Length: 139
Image (cartoon, rainbow, N blue to C red; front, top):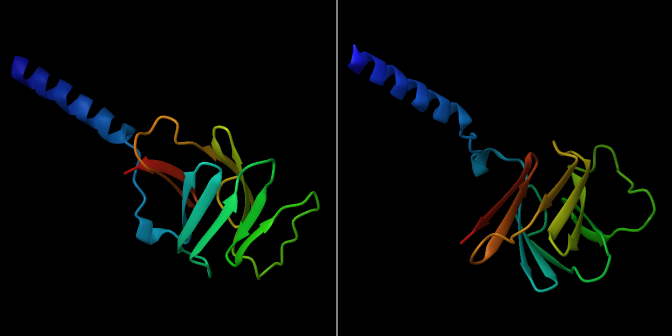
């Protein structure tokens, strides 16, 4: 009887753990994947999937915001970001601040706003952005 009780408790604990672990997204399933790295004020981007560009960079010093789409990067202004229906796969804005990067989605993404930082990580930090969100990792 005690063995049955212990087995039941073990199965309950395992079941709770299995449902609490978030499902990992396979990078191959994503439509968009951009890696961000930072060095001082510079922000470096490498598009792994979903862009016509390979590598871009911008100076994150100051209060500048940049718009990114599948074709490249431009400095944002106070004007409304113009979207060309049927021509834009995605568009988002990014800004570097003291805590890391702040993102705002404008079109074609499953999120509205995100922030990411590398403050708690040791080693080189990579911020991986896709159509569903952001993941921060170090290596």
